[in-house]
Length: 79
Image (cartoon, rainbow, N blue to C red; front, side, top):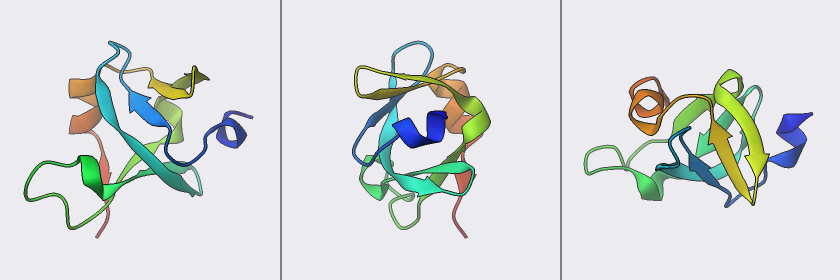
C-alpha cells in the first residue's frame, strides 16, 4: 500500500516536479505536511494532502497526480 511507503521528511512534488511541501507524517488517509514550507501567514498551522492525490513514491519523493499550483489550491488546512 502506498501509505506505507511514505515517511517523514520526504519531499512532496506536483506532477510537474515542482516542490509542494515536506511530509510531517501520515494521519489517517491524509499526508500531513510540515509547517516550515508555507508562505507567511500560513506557518501557524499544518496543511494536508488527501491520499487520493498521491500518484506514487519514487526517489524518496511523493509525487502527486496534480501539478503543484493545483495541489496547493486544494490543500486541506488544519483548524
